[in-house]
Image (cartoon, rainbow, N blue to C red; front, side, top):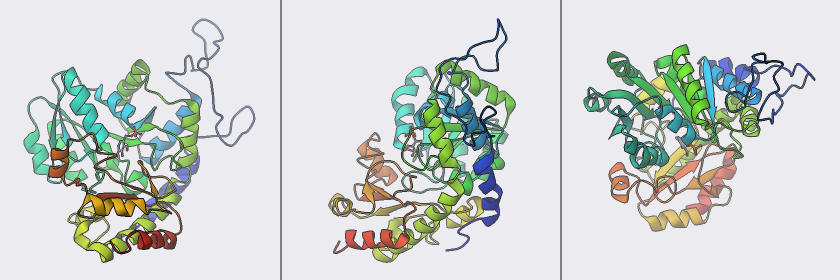
Length: 389
Ligand SMILES: Cc1ncc(COP(=O)(O)O)c(C=O)c1O
């Protein structure tokens, strides 16, 4: 495997991750921003206050997180939300009835469900296309198209979208390009630097990294766009509580450190699986056999800890999942602990079975989120899980 870790990028953001957006509390010197557990702020006089009026609009703990992640993503403004889905829902309020959005066909099942089962009824229209080929994005655009939403790598098939080619289409057609960077994180992928307008995360995953909160966050460069998102965040109110913001902020401090280990473990696990079941059955952009490995090397500084493997049948998948010990059988991803899951019945259950089959999310597909445990323990667990299968 080539170019597994971009050391220059890592060096650039390791310090930012710990310090950006935070300063010692002016009252006490507390090194961690306090959890401002308040709904309102006392004002000095009519029209005179300290910049804070009501906590749906602004909260200092949340602001520290927003500034921190905005810096990590190379953006200027961050907006934290109560969940990844709350974030996407709020971002969709940038559009209006009649607008058309081109969306990756292989996005997280919950994203598809939100668009297909809810937002369609509000007059937004969507085309779900295979964004591995940028021409398909171009072909799907109509006079009504106002935005493109992509996830790269995708969940769970680890398919990539060419960020540069997509940004070029968005620029030429004046469309809003929105990128879900949950899997790669700013440690490995920098969509804003490549021309995306909005990058967002389910911060439940790698940004928090400890499986102890649910959250979302969006980052932008442009001031005017930031004003619109701030307005939506306050008006629609899908904001996180200060404790969840604080937990996420604690997580982002070690994001570069953790991603290094997720990447190292993901690589070893992918190699082990490829040797065990054959390269063609393993989906990991860091494997030379991945059909988009060349693209991965141009737009990713590392490949991360997410690996999927096709086991052929539900029975074989169930046998393996049932034996997991160091890996835990659970939804979600991106925490320090390794997880193993069955996308067809878990994360992508909301996608109809015929559609899942078309996409390649089969009953035999298993997804692994490689944590930061000792890799030999992970490989030993895989060894016993795959024994005789
Ligand atoms: C890539 C991706 N985007 C968005 C989401 C939704 O985030 P949340 O679960 O925090 O609402 C998820 C959740 O699994 C995800 O994996």
